[in-house]
Length: 393
Image (cartoon, rainbow, N blue to C red):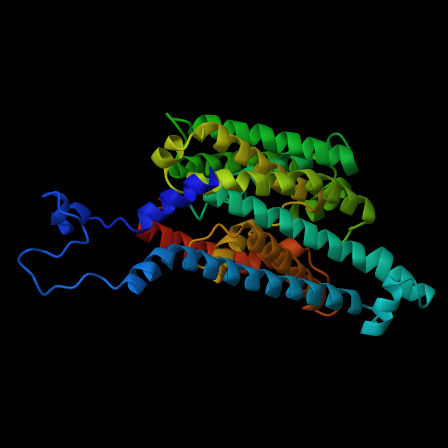
Protein backbone atom coordinates (compact mmCIF):
# COMPACT_ATOMS: atom_id res chain seq x y z
CA UNK A 1 0.00 0.00 0.00
CA UNK A 2 2.90 2.34 0.76
CA UNK A 3 4.28 2.03 -2.77
CA UNK A 4 0.79 2.66 -4.18
CA UNK A 5 0.48 5.78 -2.05
CA UNK A 6 3.83 7.04 -3.30
CA UNK A 7 2.85 6.38 -6.92
CA UNK A 8 -0.43 8.21 -6.37
CA UNK A 9 1.35 11.19 -4.76
CA UNK A 10 3.94 11.27 -7.55
CA UNK A 11 1.23 11.14 -10.19
CA UNK A 12 -0.70 13.97 -8.53
CA UNK A 13 2.45 16.08 -8.14
CA UNK A 14 3.29 15.82 -11.87
CA UNK A 15 -0.21 16.10 -13.28
CA UNK A 16 -0.92 19.75 -14.15
CA UNK A 17 -4.50 20.91 -14.36
CA UNK A 18 -4.40 21.59 -18.05
CA UNK A 19 -2.41 18.57 -19.02
CA UNK A 20 -4.63 17.43 -21.88
CA UNK A 21 -4.61 20.83 -23.47
CA UNK A 22 -0.88 21.29 -22.95
CA UNK A 23 0.08 18.05 -24.76
CA UNK A 24 -1.48 18.10 -28.23
CA UNK A 25 0.85 15.30 -29.30
CA UNK A 26 -1.38 12.87 -27.41
CA UNK A 27 -4.36 13.82 -29.54
CA UNK A 28 -2.58 13.00 -32.79
CA UNK A 29 -0.87 9.85 -31.52
CA UNK A 30 2.65 11.30 -31.86
CA UNK A 31 5.32 10.24 -29.39
CA UNK A 32 5.59 12.86 -26.63
CA UNK A 33 9.37 13.25 -27.10
CA UNK A 34 9.32 13.42 -30.90
CA UNK A 35 10.10 16.89 -32.41
CA UNK A 36 7.09 18.76 -33.72
CA UNK A 37 6.95 18.61 -37.54
CA UNK A 38 6.34 22.36 -37.72
CA UNK A 39 9.30 23.11 -35.51
CA UNK A 40 12.26 21.29 -37.09
CA UNK A 41 14.83 23.15 -34.98
CA UNK A 42 13.19 22.38 -31.60
CA UNK A 43 15.28 20.24 -29.29
CA UNK A 44 14.21 17.42 -27.01
CA UNK A 45 14.87 17.88 -23.25
CA UNK A 46 18.35 16.97 -22.22
CA UNK A 47 18.53 13.44 -20.72
CA UNK A 48 20.13 14.82 -17.57
CA UNK A 49 17.24 17.24 -17.12
CA UNK A 50 14.74 14.38 -17.52
CA UNK A 51 16.60 12.32 -14.91
CA UNK A 52 16.59 15.32 -12.55
CA UNK A 53 12.82 15.75 -13.00
CA UNK A 54 12.26 12.05 -12.38
CA UNK A 55 14.26 12.26 -9.16
CA UNK A 56 12.54 15.43 -8.01
CA UNK A 57 9.74 13.86 -5.84
CA UNK A 58 12.23 11.52 -4.19
CA UNK A 59 14.56 14.45 -3.58
CA UNK A 60 11.72 16.43 -2.00
CA UNK A 61 10.85 13.48 0.25
CA UNK A 62 14.47 13.10 1.32
CA UNK A 63 14.75 16.80 2.13
CA UNK A 64 11.46 16.67 4.07
CA UNK A 65 12.61 13.62 6.04
CA UNK A 66 15.96 15.25 6.82
CA UNK A 67 14.22 18.42 8.01
CA UNK A 68 11.80 16.42 10.18
CA UNK A 69 14.78 14.58 11.69
CA UNK A 70 16.53 17.87 12.48
CA UNK A 71 13.37 19.30 14.08
CA UNK A 72 12.94 16.10 16.12
CA UNK A 73 16.52 16.24 17.38
CA UNK A 74 16.22 19.91 18.32
CA UNK A 75 12.95 19.31 20.18
CA UNK A 76 14.48 16.30 21.97
CA UNK A 77 17.44 18.42 23.09
CA UNK A 78 15.05 21.17 24.23
CA UNK A 79 13.08 18.64 26.29
CA UNK A 80 16.25 17.40 28.01
CA UNK A 81 17.26 21.00 28.79
CA UNK A 82 13.82 21.84 30.24
CA UNK A 83 13.81 18.67 32.37
CA UNK A 84 17.27 19.51 33.69
CA UNK A 85 16.18 23.06 34.57
CA UNK A 86 13.06 21.77 36.32
CA UNK A 87 15.21 19.40 38.40
CA UNK A 88 17.59 22.20 39.43
CA UNK A 89 15.15 24.99 40.30
CA UNK A 90 12.96 25.23 43.36
CA UNK A 91 13.01 26.18 47.05
CA UNK A 92 15.99 23.81 47.40
CA UNK A 93 18.19 24.85 44.47
CA UNK A 94 20.57 22.22 43.14
CA UNK A 95 23.51 22.45 40.77
CA UNK A 96 23.73 20.34 37.62
CA UNK A 97 26.36 17.97 39.14
CA UNK A 98 24.15 17.55 42.23
CA UNK A 99 21.21 16.61 40.00
CA UNK A 100 23.23 14.04 38.03
CA UNK A 101 24.63 12.70 41.30
CA UNK A 102 21.12 12.30 42.74
CA UNK A 103 19.92 10.57 39.57
CA UNK A 104 22.84 8.15 39.95
CA UNK A 105 21.93 7.52 43.59
CA UNK A 106 24.65 9.67 45.17
CA UNK A 107 24.50 12.84 47.25
CA UNK A 108 22.71 14.02 50.38
CA UNK A 109 19.37 12.65 51.53
CA UNK A 110 17.74 15.98 50.81
CA UNK A 111 19.02 16.03 47.23
CA UNK A 112 17.98 12.41 46.65
CA UNK A 113 14.46 13.08 47.98
CA UNK A 114 13.94 16.36 46.13
CA UNK A 115 15.16 15.05 42.79
CA UNK A 116 13.83 11.48 42.77
CA UNK A 117 10.59 11.85 44.74
CA UNK A 118 9.42 15.40 44.02
CA UNK A 119 10.83 16.99 40.86
CA UNK A 120 11.51 13.99 38.61
CA UNK A 121 7.93 12.61 38.89
CA UNK A 122 6.59 16.09 38.10
CA UNK A 123 8.84 16.53 35.07
CA UNK A 124 8.09 13.00 33.86
CA UNK A 125 4.36 13.57 34.21
CA UNK A 126 4.55 16.86 32.31
CA UNK A 127 6.52 15.19 29.53
CA UNK A 128 4.13 12.23 29.15
CA UNK A 129 0.99 14.38 29.33
CA UNK A 130 2.42 16.70 26.68
CA UNK A 131 3.17 13.75 24.39
CA UNK A 132 -0.40 12.42 24.81
CA UNK A 133 -2.02 15.79 24.11
CA UNK A 134 0.29 16.59 21.19
CA UNK A 135 -0.46 13.26 19.51
CA UNK A 136 -4.19 13.56 20.20
CA UNK A 137 -4.37 17.03 18.66
CA UNK A 138 -2.36 15.97 15.60
CA UNK A 139 -4.67 12.99 15.01
CA UNK A 140 -7.89 14.99 15.36
CA UNK A 141 -6.72 17.81 13.09
CA UNK A 142 -5.51 15.38 10.43
CA UNK A 143 -8.62 13.18 10.55
CA UNK A 144 -11.12 15.99 9.98
CA UNK A 145 -8.68 18.34 8.15
CA UNK A 146 -9.57 21.24 10.39
CA UNK A 147 -7.09 23.11 12.64
CA UNK A 148 -9.86 23.72 15.21
CA UNK A 149 -10.52 20.02 15.70
CA UNK A 150 -8.54 19.49 18.88
CA UNK A 151 -9.90 17.66 21.94
CA UNK A 152 -10.16 21.05 23.73
CA UNK A 153 -12.55 22.47 21.16
CA UNK A 154 -14.73 19.53 20.15
CA UNK A 155 -15.76 18.58 23.68
CA UNK A 156 -13.55 15.58 24.47
CA UNK A 157 -11.60 17.32 27.21
CA UNK A 158 -14.73 18.95 28.63
CA UNK A 159 -16.54 15.59 28.71
CA UNK A 160 -13.58 13.98 30.45
CA UNK A 161 -13.65 16.86 32.96
CA UNK A 162 -17.34 16.37 33.67
CA UNK A 163 -16.82 12.64 34.17
CA UNK A 164 -13.79 13.21 36.38
CA UNK A 165 -15.55 15.81 38.56
CA UNK A 166 -18.49 13.45 39.02
CA UNK A 167 -16.13 10.58 39.89
CA UNK A 168 -14.25 12.72 42.43
CA UNK A 169 -17.17 14.51 44.10
CA UNK A 170 -19.85 11.84 43.97
CA UNK A 171 -17.96 8.55 43.92
CA UNK A 172 -14.75 9.66 45.66
CA UNK A 173 -12.52 7.90 43.11
CA UNK A 174 -8.82 8.47 42.48
CA UNK A 175 -5.84 6.74 40.86
CA UNK A 176 -6.48 3.92 38.38
CA UNK A 177 -10.24 3.90 39.08
CA UNK A 178 -10.50 7.61 38.25
CA UNK A 179 -8.49 7.11 35.06
CA UNK A 180 -10.74 4.26 33.94
CA UNK A 181 -13.95 6.21 34.59
CA UNK A 182 -12.61 9.31 32.82
CA UNK A 183 -11.53 7.23 29.82
CA UNK A 184 -14.97 5.60 29.64
CA UNK A 185 -16.73 8.98 29.87
CA UNK A 186 -14.57 10.47 27.13
CA UNK A 187 -15.21 7.50 24.83
CA UNK A 188 -18.98 7.78 25.39
CA UNK A 189 -18.86 11.51 24.62
CA UNK A 190 -16.77 10.87 21.48
CA UNK A 191 -19.29 8.27 20.32
CA UNK A 192 -22.14 10.76 20.86
CA UNK A 193 -20.27 13.48 18.93
CA UNK A 194 -19.48 11.08 16.09
CA UNK A 195 -23.08 9.86 15.77
CA UNK A 196 -24.58 13.35 15.99
CA UNK A 197 -22.15 14.63 13.34
CA UNK A 198 -22.84 11.68 11.02
CA UNK A 199 -24.63 12.44 7.76
CA UNK A 200 -23.47 9.98 5.11
CA UNK A 201 -20.04 10.39 6.65
CA UNK A 202 -18.42 12.83 9.07
CA UNK A 203 -17.22 16.27 7.97
CA UNK A 204 -14.86 18.41 10.00
CA UNK A 205 -17.28 21.35 10.06
CA UNK A 206 -20.16 19.35 11.60
CA UNK A 207 -17.82 17.57 14.01
CA UNK A 208 -16.51 20.88 15.37
CA UNK A 209 -20.00 22.38 15.75
CA UNK A 210 -21.42 19.29 17.48
CA UNK A 211 -18.32 19.11 19.68
CA UNK A 212 -18.76 22.73 20.78
CA UNK A 213 -22.34 21.91 21.80
CA UNK A 214 -21.21 18.83 23.77
CA UNK A 215 -18.50 20.94 25.43
CA UNK A 216 -21.13 23.47 26.56
CA UNK A 217 -23.26 20.65 27.99
CA UNK A 218 -20.24 19.20 29.82
CA UNK A 219 -19.40 22.64 31.26
CA UNK A 220 -22.95 22.93 32.57
CA UNK A 221 -22.64 19.53 34.26
CA UNK A 222 -19.36 20.58 35.88
CA UNK A 223 -20.96 23.78 37.23
CA UNK A 224 -23.91 21.78 38.57
CA UNK A 225 -21.62 19.35 40.41
CA UNK A 226 -19.53 22.15 41.89
CA UNK A 227 -22.54 24.11 43.19
CA UNK A 228 -24.08 21.02 44.83
CA UNK A 229 -20.91 19.79 46.62
CA UNK A 230 -19.27 20.72 49.92
CA UNK A 231 -16.75 23.55 49.86
CA UNK A 232 -13.85 21.34 50.97
CA UNK A 233 -14.50 18.86 48.16
CA UNK A 234 -14.96 21.69 45.67
CA UNK A 235 -11.53 23.13 46.49
CA UNK A 236 -9.88 19.81 45.64
CA UNK A 237 -11.94 19.43 42.50
CA UNK A 238 -11.17 22.97 41.32
CA UNK A 239 -7.42 22.27 41.42
CA UNK A 240 -7.94 19.13 39.32
CA UNK A 241 -10.28 20.79 36.82
CA UNK A 242 -7.80 23.61 36.16
CA UNK A 243 -5.07 21.18 35.23
CA UNK A 244 -2.29 20.86 37.77
CA UNK A 245 0.98 18.98 38.25
CA UNK A 246 1.28 19.90 41.92
CA UNK A 247 0.32 16.40 43.09
CA UNK A 248 2.47 14.50 40.62
CA UNK A 249 3.63 11.09 41.81
CA UNK A 250 5.28 7.98 40.47
CA UNK A 251 1.90 6.18 40.67
CA UNK A 252 0.39 8.66 38.20
CA UNK A 253 3.47 8.41 35.99
CA UNK A 254 3.01 4.62 36.00
CA UNK A 255 -0.62 5.03 34.85
CA UNK A 256 0.46 7.27 32.00
CA UNK A 257 3.39 5.10 30.98
CA UNK A 258 1.37 1.87 31.03
CA UNK A 259 -1.32 3.39 28.84
CA UNK A 260 1.12 4.99 26.43
CA UNK A 261 2.87 1.67 25.87
CA UNK A 262 -0.33 0.62 24.09
CA UNK A 263 -1.56 3.88 22.57
CA UNK A 264 1.60 5.43 21.13
CA UNK A 265 2.61 2.41 18.97
CA UNK A 266 -1.03 2.09 17.85
CA UNK A 267 -0.95 5.75 16.80
CA UNK A 268 2.13 5.39 14.62
CA UNK A 269 0.89 2.14 13.08
CA UNK A 270 -2.39 3.80 12.08
CA UNK A 271 -0.53 6.84 10.77
CA UNK A 272 0.10 4.92 7.53
CA UNK A 273 -3.64 4.88 6.82
CA UNK A 274 -3.87 8.53 7.86
CA UNK A 275 -1.38 9.31 5.09
CA UNK A 276 -3.72 7.58 2.65
CA UNK A 277 -6.73 9.56 3.92
CA UNK A 278 -4.85 12.79 3.21
CA UNK A 279 -4.94 11.93 -0.51
CA UNK A 280 -8.71 12.40 -0.45
CA UNK A 281 -11.66 10.08 0.11
CA UNK A 282 -11.85 8.92 -3.50
CA UNK A 283 -8.14 8.09 -3.74
CA UNK A 284 -8.16 6.37 -0.34
CA UNK A 285 -11.19 4.27 -1.29
CA UNK A 286 -9.54 3.37 -4.61
CA UNK A 287 -6.51 2.12 -2.66
CA UNK A 288 -8.73 -0.19 -0.62
CA UNK A 289 -8.98 1.81 2.62
CA UNK A 290 -12.24 1.57 4.56
CA UNK A 291 -12.81 5.27 5.21
CA UNK A 292 -15.22 5.30 8.13
CA UNK A 293 -13.68 2.33 9.94
CA UNK A 294 -10.23 3.93 9.66
CA UNK A 295 -11.54 7.28 10.88
CA UNK A 296 -13.35 5.59 13.78
CA UNK A 297 -10.21 3.74 14.93
CA UNK A 298 -8.13 6.92 14.69
CA UNK A 299 -10.74 8.91 16.64
CA UNK A 300 -10.88 6.26 19.38
CA UNK A 301 -7.08 6.38 19.67
CA UNK A 302 -7.07 10.19 19.81
CA UNK A 303 -9.83 10.22 22.43
CA UNK A 304 -8.00 7.65 24.56
CA UNK A 305 -4.78 9.71 24.46
CA UNK A 306 -6.57 12.88 25.57
CA UNK A 307 -8.66 11.10 28.20
CA UNK A 308 -5.64 9.45 29.84
CA UNK A 309 -3.86 12.80 30.09
CA UNK A 310 -6.95 14.49 31.55
CA UNK A 311 -7.54 11.68 34.04
CA UNK A 312 -4.10 12.25 35.57
CA UNK A 313 -3.60 16.04 35.60
CA UNK A 314 -7.02 17.41 34.71
CA UNK A 315 -7.99 19.32 31.56
CA UNK A 316 -4.87 21.24 30.51
CA UNK A 317 -6.16 23.47 27.75
CA UNK A 318 -4.70 24.40 24.37
CA UNK A 319 -1.65 22.08 24.42
CA UNK A 320 -3.29 19.75 21.90
CA UNK A 321 -4.51 22.72 19.85
CA UNK A 322 -1.16 24.45 19.38
CA UNK A 323 1.29 21.55 19.20
CA UNK A 324 0.42 20.02 15.84
CA UNK A 325 0.18 23.26 13.77
CA UNK A 326 3.49 24.54 15.14
CA UNK A 327 5.14 21.17 14.49
CA UNK A 328 3.83 21.08 10.92
CA UNK A 329 5.08 24.63 10.41
CA UNK A 330 8.55 23.67 11.63
CA UNK A 331 8.73 20.53 9.50
CA UNK A 332 7.07 22.07 6.43
CA UNK A 333 6.28 20.26 3.16
CA UNK A 334 2.76 19.44 4.40
CA UNK A 335 4.00 16.43 6.35
CA UNK A 336 1.95 14.75 9.08
CA UNK A 337 4.74 15.28 11.69
CA UNK A 338 3.30 13.09 14.44
CA UNK A 339 6.58 12.69 16.33
CA UNK A 340 7.45 16.43 16.26
CA UNK A 341 3.89 17.20 17.40
CA UNK A 342 4.26 14.82 20.35
CA UNK A 343 7.63 16.31 21.32
CA UNK A 344 6.33 19.85 20.93
CA UNK A 345 3.45 19.00 23.28
CA UNK A 346 6.03 17.88 25.84
CA UNK A 347 8.01 21.12 25.34
CA UNK A 348 4.87 23.23 25.87
CA UNK A 349 3.91 21.34 29.04
CA UNK A 350 7.41 21.49 30.55
CA UNK A 351 7.85 25.19 29.74
CA UNK A 352 4.36 26.07 31.01
CA UNK A 353 5.02 24.20 34.26
CA UNK A 354 8.25 26.12 34.83
CA UNK A 355 6.43 29.41 34.25
CA UNK A 356 3.60 28.31 36.56
CA UNK A 357 6.07 27.51 39.33
CA UNK A 358 8.52 30.40 39.11
CA UNK A 359 6.94 33.33 37.23
CA UNK A 360 5.55 34.77 40.47
CA UNK A 361 7.89 34.20 43.45
CA UNK A 362 6.20 32.40 46.30
CA UNK A 363 3.13 31.39 44.25
CA UNK A 364 2.68 28.21 42.21
CA UNK A 365 -0.17 28.30 39.68
CA UNK A 366 -1.83 25.29 38.09
CA UNK A 367 -0.18 24.64 34.75
CA UNK A 368 -3.56 24.96 33.02
CA UNK A 369 -3.64 28.67 33.91
CA UNK A 370 -0.45 29.29 31.94
CA UNK A 371 -1.49 27.23 28.91
CA UNK A 372 -4.85 29.04 28.93
CA UNK A 373 -3.18 32.47 28.94
CA UNK A 374 -0.95 31.47 26.03
CA UNK A 375 -3.54 29.45 24.13
CA UNK A 376 -6.51 31.82 24.21
CA UNK A 377 -4.93 34.48 21.93
CA UNK A 378 -3.77 31.72 19.61
CA UNK A 379 -7.33 30.37 19.41
CA UNK A 380 -8.69 33.83 18.54
CA UNK A 381 -6.08 34.23 15.80
CA UNK A 382 -6.85 30.72 14.52
CA UNK A 383 -10.60 31.40 14.45
CA UNK A 384 -10.05 34.57 12.43
CA UNK A 385 -7.73 32.78 10.01
CA UNK A 386 -9.92 29.72 9.51
CA UNK A 387 -13.08 31.78 9.06
CA UNK A 388 -11.29 33.81 6.40
CA UNK A 389 -10.43 30.55 4.62
CA UNK A 390 -13.91 29.09 5.16
CA UNK A 391 -12.70 26.18 7.31
CA UNK A 392 -13.90 27.03 10.77
CA UNK A 393 -17.39 28.38 10.20
